[in-house]
Image (cartoon, rainbow over all chains, first blue to last red):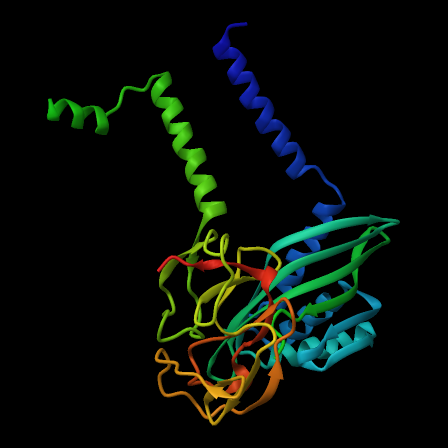
Amino acid sequence: MNSKKLILVGIVAVILIILGFTLWPGDKRAIRKQVARMEELASKAPDEKAIDSLFRARNMAKLFHDPCTLEIEYADFVGEYSRKNIQDRIVLARNSFSQVKVSTHDLDISLLGNKQASLLCTLRITGKGAGSQVGDVQELEANLKKMDGDWLFTKLAMVEVLER
Amino acid sequence: MQDRLLRTFLLPKVNRAYLLRLLALVVGSVILFSQVLLPLRIQGHSMEPTYRDGTWNFCWRGRYLFHDPKPGDVVVIRFAGTRVNLLKRIVALSGETVAFQKGVLLVNGRAVNEPYLQDPLPWNLAPRTVEPGKVYVVGDNRRVPMEVHQFGQVNMQRIVGGLLW
């Protein structure tokens, strides 16, 4: 095999290894999908109907373990909450926006064993509140547990980056 | 001679040396713009009028390699990573006391001259001491109510660097 062929084989092997690592179904990939689903369900289009809003809140609440520990101090949302309670809060929170886009960045997932995982990411919320533009960035820390094949949030906490 | 140089520059011969130069350029650029100079698109109004919404800048990560940040510096503060950051101005260092009185910033009880401000609202904040290992940061846009402005003490380890300009 000449050197050109060797380099080509090497490049193809590297690409295949990278693809294998990124596309291989695993727990980290499943957790990423759950987070992406949360982003999608939390976001709101300007023309969203009330029934869609309820449907989205119900589906989003299904991503949480029943009960789930929440530590969102600035929204006075601290303690253990049932899935129904979380769904009601999601409806209220989404209703305060006429449109909103939720996105996560710098997602770092750690598998802890025993079907448990923790994640850290940056949460960005942009949208329109009561006529005015709203923008917020927070650091989110979460614990998840695998139950019946699904990764559910057991704890969600906002990290206080700036303390007044 | 100049024509030939220009033609070689614009239409290079694709050979091994050219490919190596191209590879070095790509790798160098990736390292430079992911580790040393992070491109930033400023979104939001918290640092206006100094830095406007929609403008571009770079975070220079070497800014605090040889000295610590000082009051007046505009710093880049990271969250979980460096994809989304906050841009704020340092107003006090650890051990100092910070307060706002009718919109005037007081550090250790003395009023601070802040020429970068425009029509600040009369913010009032009781005195508080900055904890060790932290600095106190505030945005330049004080034309918004204090309740909606993100500011406070932040761990020094969260400071990624300073702005290039």
